[in-house]
Length: 359
Image (cartoon, rainbow, N blue to C red; front, side, top):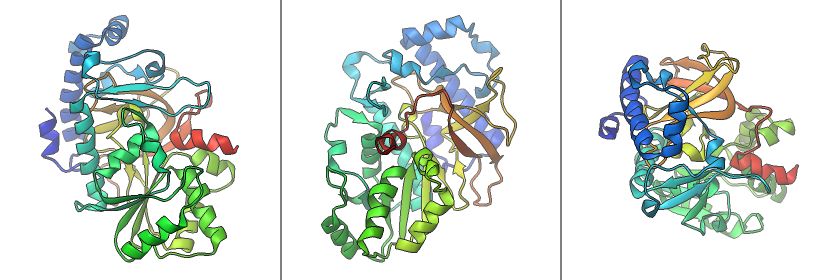
């Protein structure tokens, strides 16, 4: 039951404690989706799935994330669909469609609050969004960009969008926000390439300076384009430190297929798995589990997907486990490094998809 998770801090369980809790919940989800989603049941049958052979969540079958582009996968009646979220995709690419009922949408919000509260504190804070308000106009059909912003709204005491629809920087909104919140803790959120292209570059050209020393800069995705321009993560942070005084950085890894369960960056620069999810690098030749420090294709598991069979997915990303239960920040669980898309995979991250327009 998810209530067992809610009673715990999001990074409070060691390997064995987390393994026991996750295995029970993920096994129950597998059975639920087998009974309620016909394509998922057929996949399990084709794989010869047998419940009594599952000893831990590492043994659970995983669904290729690409399947959400090729079929409507849901475990609820269509009339219970409350919200449909779509992945990013360039023109001509198919997009994933994720169907949420009210319960799943609320659970995703609740868990997002718990995870981010561990980094930002439990009090709501102002949020400056490096995007245009247009991205959240259609509340029924969300892109991953819009969904991320709406999900964060719940932790914000106030939300301001600092880009116009043509992606130009709205200096009037920025100045008003900074006059009001100078010296306060606040959140800056945007997809990495957009933050760099439309916020940092424009501020640098303008010659204006703002003291954002108390701000947390939360970014996600888009490193492929920046690294192709020889801008490393360290360079990115240094530039913002020098221009705005920012020294709190909160990068994260996540995907629309498992919204709510993000892998957020700690003070040591590591991305952490919370008690609600886990990440398993697998060897491409036989899908066996990689050792710590060994690169593999990433499987992600999450206890949140109830309205669709997204609880155990094989992504199109590569990464590795840096360690487990021993990060200097004090958070338990795995901490990981994301290396990017598998070479043959479609470019599908929000920030990466947007960045393609500037290639």
